[in-house]
Image (tube, rainbow over the protein chains, first blue to last red):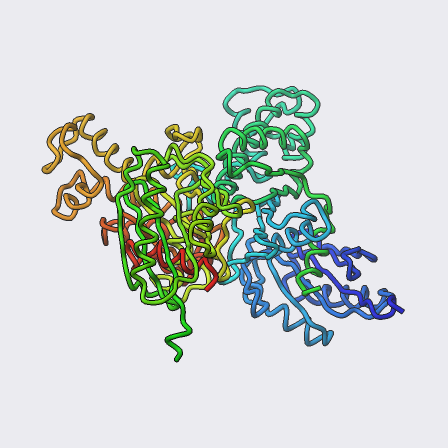
Length: 316
Length: 316
């Protein structure tokens, strides 16, 4: 009996490379997964048409009726009206009323929220931050996103534009960021920045056992792997990345005294060396009282986090 | 009739120099004010004995029964247990169970909270942030304190140690702060730091029409006054202070997207030149979406803010 009354939900995570869909039960368990490439170069109309077909497909596969659709999308977006504004990652999605489009088509409640916020909600509901009443999530990938969950509630800003942690500066005189500010953490510690910093070191004449030339295929993932295998230059780049992130996290800790910091995204692949350096830096830089009892951990839900968080945001 | 049922409350703001007490009605209006010098050099026992006498005195003066006592005190403190831990400003107050002491003596509900948090609550209830559902308060004085009010609720941290905004760094390689970190905003923009920076400029051979020697009585207030009168060096110091504060505020705006920033404390005396430079810097450095609609204003309640906030925190 209980089985019949517990409905299912659809969570969607729209990214620059892939769109992930998942049928999720009321306890946050992902039952069916489906992934399509975004192919953003096709233009937003074709991408949205394929998204709608994918929604139809996965809803048909669901064993129970789907009671709502939660969608995570790169910001900035208007989360009240459900409009995608102009994400750098989806350049031609300007003013797309995605909530309305999906609502009309499927006649279901739809929410739209910043992707990083939903990853945070997911990890807070079912993942690494499961029992934390306050946590800050950092997603470290091509860009750096964040989510602030304070007193069990997601804080998404007075107008929904909070959590732009990638554009928090750690050096007011630092290098110029694409956003116009200086010394944004994204300039130092995004996947792109990590690769750039190693290339810069090579240009200055430093040597690596793994990367011989700036023309090699140098990626953040490759650097983490090389660091684990003992490449000194790669190890230094990882250490410095931990210092930059740790300094930024110490600022969050002093300002907001969260119970937990959850780190997710591609950079989680750097593993223990990066996490250890982050922890060491936070210990050196944050106030003793503010960091007492603080946990700094890696996310547990991987690519499911955004889907699970999208369902949580539906108000389950 | 309504008059008879509306009770009064006592708000207290304990500072390093003065202790302020006020009888406040249920609408946040201060009806009676009383101030005693802290005289912290007498040691905590004598200060607390005088505080208790002052409470007795002002309660007797109240026209109506006092239904609760709210106390603001410099942090760090344990706001759940009501214990003052070890404020730099009251060095011998280590582990003082102030809530219990006052409760026992007066048999009334007592709360203890970080002073800056209560100033924030006061300004949010009755002052400059009256209609803001989210605001960040900065108190700029000998130190720099803050309060985060997000979604109409004070966020004081997972263990009550949030809001240490003075120890948020704007330069990870900046000058060493007393707390052990580098580049904390307090090192640049506290009243002490403002005076120090002008002295350093004089030592480097820069000249001021007002301050002839580092042996002059150089205070932040004096510098603000000199800047208003056209002293170029003082004006530059004020401008740089606005740049430092603006850079720090841009970080808050990108991370939390608050509706309003309220600036209070002694530095509010610097007035329009400082505020203008802060606004200009935030405009240059914060993301367009995150700062849209943002108000940056000076607090309105002056020295009453902490008293009014203490009463608000009683749960009125």
